[in-house]
Image (cartoon, rainbow over all chains, first blue to last red; front, side):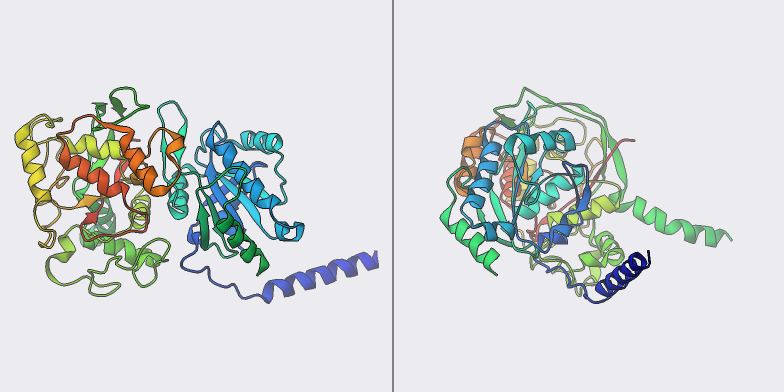
Length: 192
Length: 255
């Protein structure tokens, strides 16, 4: 009992200490994390997009009912991962943000995660608030248009963000064969 | 007491009349000049409210004063490029004279979007802008009239170095909306959608994408050069871009 309270106490002390020490470094002006957009993932967790700061990310936008290009975006993310060593892989995340928040519910996103076998330790599947879709797309340089039949047409692109949310590289080559220039940029980023 | 009451009301009145206040636009069927392959004839435009005139420098300055993150010396570069609000005398001071009443220009899409959001409004969608801009003084759709086309086309031939008129100085159209043509270009919410084709296979190289996107549109009415120029210009922009002649107005959904 005494040991437990001692442990609790030291945990509290450590925590307060840890909170007091780091001075928050401002988000760089050229970072997409200047956006205050919030996302909701496939477990219904709501989080600030900028809370992804701290770990480089390969980001893209997609929608789950998409049959042709979006599966290739997932393939593209997987191909990048498979080209990395397990150590490198652990230092980068893949974030797919929905263009279609009205239909891509957490349940729909969860199904996609199961079907495509996307490791939650590295892959984030999330939908933005409706009013933030075009803001996020604008920051990532993604153009899109809702088609009459409920599909979307959009720039299929992988965007590499450094740990602070700055765009370092982008490639429109999606699918199973990674763009070598983009892959090299990913490697350099995780090596830092 | 009366003066005090008035004072209390003033800020409210000022923000409610940004853009000259909103006017109601009835809904209707509308054939956009942009006919996408996936489209199915005319679009149904839902009723909405639109600012009578573009947002002015003074109005935008009031927004910037309240939201200093949008000052030109503080704005994140990811939201606005270098020329953002460069026409002002200082980050929080307009140039003397007419500037206060002229339409604000050199605003990025992100800044315009934030301004409208702060008003509980949003930027118009292209179809909404085009719908209101199709009107002349007496008709809701004047696009078939060659004289009207000539008039709006004439503006595009004028040098852009000419000083801007006051916002709202142009004659109102049938809805009571001013300056849709002849003063500034205006941002729309879906600027980045305009030339996106309906065929995903065109999404490869960005230059080609734009080109193919344009190809996948059939232009419903090739006589509408003035409107098409707008589409071409808007579709070439990034959200952080600003230009000397690009301003905006907001719309509100009907409650």
